[in-house]
Length: 82
Image (cartoon, rainbow, N blue to C red; front, side, top):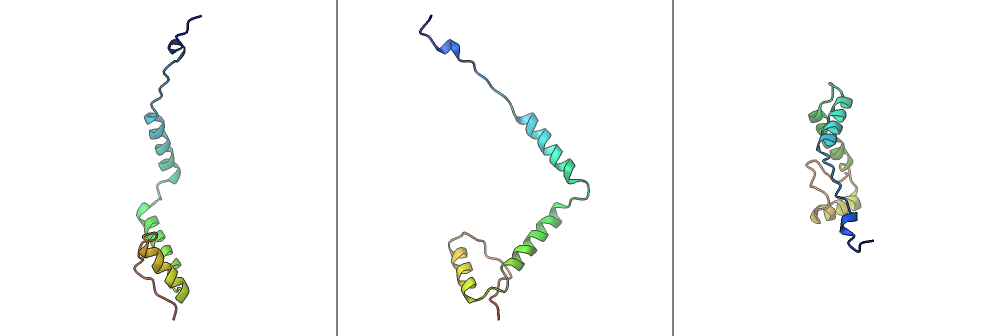
């Protein structure tokens, strides 16, 4: 038995490019022809604007702290509750 173990190893490579292309095509097909990515993005922005609107004083302070720390982006329509 030889002490050279390098011959016992086999190089195994897989190119996943084709599989990734198939996966992405399947996702787009599953979304269907009526999927509108721009409308989805607008809806998400509206949801975030609503989520961060009407904050009370303490919530606004925390939000401002998170924005200053660059944890959250500054929302365009964030206002403290009146």
